[in-house]
Length: 158
Image: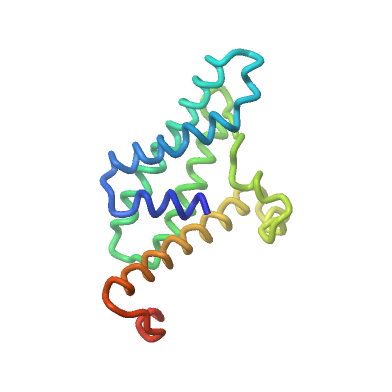
């Protein structure tokens, strides 16, 4: 649901708006995730959360840009590719990376778990992200159909 929410929040926005949305999405997520670091100091929690949220800011900008591409059916695929790229970058930068908070880590006992045997955590993340992108795309389609005055099955099929 979080993937779909971020995709919807950045849809049709400028890159700058998408970046701020991604950053605003990432800071509370990482603050809660990394709260245990308060044994080192709250400055460590806040600093690392801001650094990690910067990656989500870049992804938010990317999500905003790909939402404007001419083939809307590919939007879920681009969304998943951006999540993979963001997690890949966070896994390597800075100082060897910090992979905490990957989508795959939250899906250990889910229908996506068998994907790990085929492609590890990146494939699980891809499966979760493409599903979230598809949910966002379906929500947008239903909203547009509703605003157009009807939700006929024939209109929803494309």
